[in-house]
Length: 367
Image 1 (cartoon, rainbow, N blue to C red):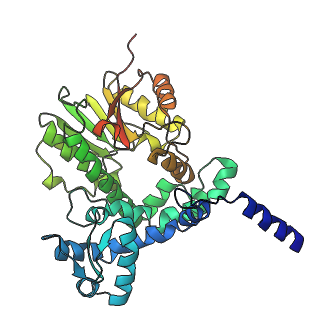
Image 2: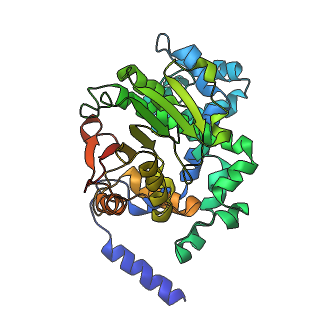
Image 3: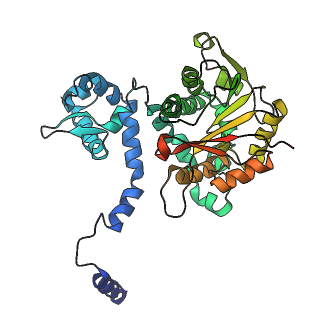
């Protein structure tokens, strides 16, 4: 054994480059990946302990540095522990540390504060929570079956688990709203989504609307449309209908069984929740409600080719583990659309393709 170890060391030395590598060595990258949960939990605590809110109040107005002691006092936390967390968070732009150990918000921290209109804090709280972690802990099982491991992790499928645990469903729904806060900004702004247009439709159904954030933004850009917020009854029950604009209505449905009639349907992060069989049911129900309707599919993508990083590739694994679902390439989407009676998608990129979400506009195929 000792001889093998010496041989391995000699081979390693022989293959080492005599010059410094252009970036971190592979070993450091591997360890950084393996400790990714440290970052997730640090970011989660930044939100849950209200450090984010405290820094928003103390630092934002004049973009000033504030001591860790003052931040800890405002959040009712231990000053030393708070400093240690902020020092770590400063390494990935959540905050900025000055030489005197004071801090101000960084660009990433700014979108984790409670009052930022593009805040993704609620999405962070869901993705860094125990619920998805319990599922991802069964990744090895998923790799043997290519099937959701939700029953092994939760004792039932994901949607049944939500139904039995309304407090967890509430976290998930807020996360969907968190995604919408950011994504709706791109759809509201014509400079960032210049080819996207709802102005020709009388009624627009936001299918899987969660709390309706997306449609509230869309109504500012397309005020003449009537909007239907459609989701599971327990999700719709969370909507404050008294606060909705006059042209809004809500309906509790299960879109695997039926959908309300509309001229256009907007499905944001819906199709990636389902396998092809259930996705085809959703499209069939849309066609039954209105065979002439236009459908807008909003998902992460377009998924690029080999070795190119993209959020859709990570989400594909996540969706498979938890929901027996998937992200799709454009070819896979178009094959699904064709089977459901729709033409190939007309693609609308956001921010010129610089944002990882995109829109696919579907028209029904006519005989």
